[in-house]
Image (cartoon, rainbow, N blue to C red; front, side, top):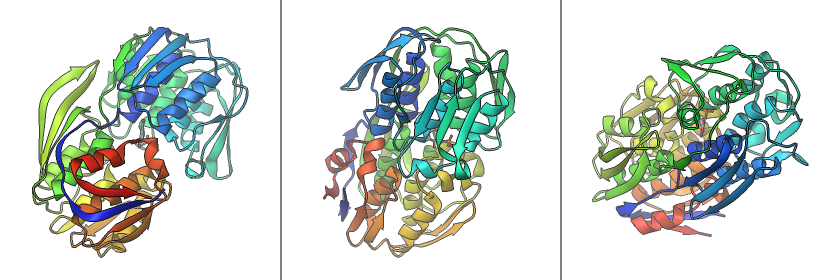
Length: 432
Ligand code: S3P
């Protein structure tokens, strides 16, 4: 599938983007091993979250839906998962693979986790290393890549793990293995990352202690089913936040968006660039803060992005680079080498794509330097990366020519109705 984004367009109205991907994955995983039936609304019906559903069905969990964002998970309890008949294929989803690895390390049976071409290039030793330290038997392939082979029936013990990188997936993986480990498991992170696992475990009644950068839990407790209302995904909202910020005359409201403090780097960064962003009607929805977000056009200026915002905006950089391309002056990002191991190398792919459209963009080892200018147009490939595809669709709002984006199927991993919502807002996006 290819996107053709015509230059110009408007960004107005009120939208609700789909449910949070991180929270949707965790609802299924935690609901599956809880006691009782967990009910979910606002679930992301994207391929990544569906991969997690498929994996748990393959392990004997009855899951009804998703139907209009509603899902019911018939929990089998902490010891109730069954050996799957074959490999667990999780498509493009790094979150599925890395969190499942932790959960599966503590099961009685063996599993094999596989993924698509993009996921098959991504580093898995970052989870295999701490799991082995807990007593798990985990194999990865050449270069530490998938498939991951996890040998069940091991007695896990808690560890005190200091993460070498800021990663919520690694943190969550270790904590999930900790549910099945003897004694206490502790994670300490170098910078705050999304804390949905810690919040949701508590929501399911599992005692988790958080003290600054350290989260800890004891193995062996049980979880109780709950109802979860999944907020709209701020990472999906980000495309429209940038779209409205760069489009003269824009005035857009995004409803029911999750504004967990570990996720709001995009708001902080756009505001620092001069963006006009209001958080309205702030409220708490089942332990996660939510707001409606109103964004109006404002001329942006280039900034040095504060390094402490990097983990808080980790998935939003491709589209923030588009904002930087439309800003006056230079934007510099540092300390973001993690972007090189996402669904694509997001530093290189964005630098090359923007440079091909008349923008001065220089990739550095751990970031990028972008000088604002005039986006022309042209052809780019998403490299199987949903967020690259959507970012260039947004760029067309300020381009002089059309932008053709190849290989857009994976937009459905996180944002299945992106094109419809973009058109609804006034963007001139077509699919071929
Ligand atoms: C996620 C954590 C982040 C993020 C990903 C979702 C999660 O990955 O990029 O989209 O749900 O825990 P890292 O932990 O690799 O930074």
